[in-house]
Length: 327
Image 1 (tube, rainbow, N blue to C red):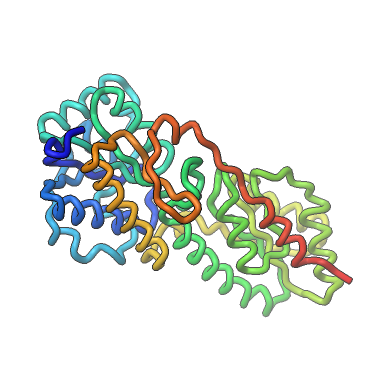
Image 2 (spheres, rainbow, N blue to C red):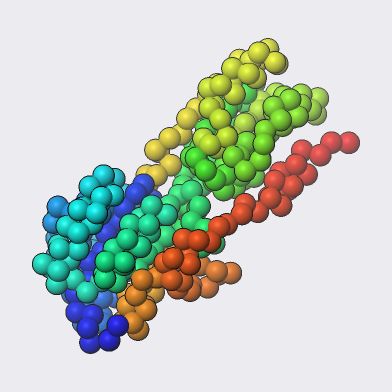
């Protein structure tokens, strides 16, 4: 892509919202302005391109969104975009608006949509933002740290009441296909047990025996953290009741983990990624994803990035087990 060709770009957020998305939008808009590039906000993700739902964005339009949770551009799933006809409509919208490229902020699903558009001739740059931290090509995704802190704050409060009543608490956190959030949070709150999709669950060993050993060590309250992909917290609570005689309390944190003001880490990372995305387009590096690798930002071609996988750092689970070592 010739540097002079980039005159106007679009920016959208897609998939599940994540704290820090607004910070990324702000960085894209302001970096574009600094390079003499006009910016158009596409509302409601890929759906906005299909149905021509957009708003011009200036620097002043993003002045007070750095600390805001959610996304000012909204997000939505788009069944129409999954069809060839829908994608052609999206390309037509880009042509009508004179967009030279689109910056798409989201997760794997967002990037698969970006890949389809790139095959139709549109330059797209992806920014990974998902609280699950499950984008294979990037070591970190925007929103993960904020979601962890939200979950930790909630669990710390739950622990206060569980300790007062000498009860067991089963807390379900997000993570349908990945246990990053559950394991990170579990370590941070000193959970009795953590159940994740990447590790087969031996209920007797991983839950019941952990509770028993914790009780033998003098503890009277227990915290079980469950990733949603590892099983239902309600079912796990019922099994604990059947096998230990305790009366567990189940809490599903759900979408509360998506909300709230982003942490310093997510604000800083989102700002750097937004800047990097626009500068990649300025350099002529379209059809790529901005990724973190060993603390540095790099760009990877979309097809290569989507083919990469990321494995959970199981040494964290080893640390968790060591925290429950007994004499």
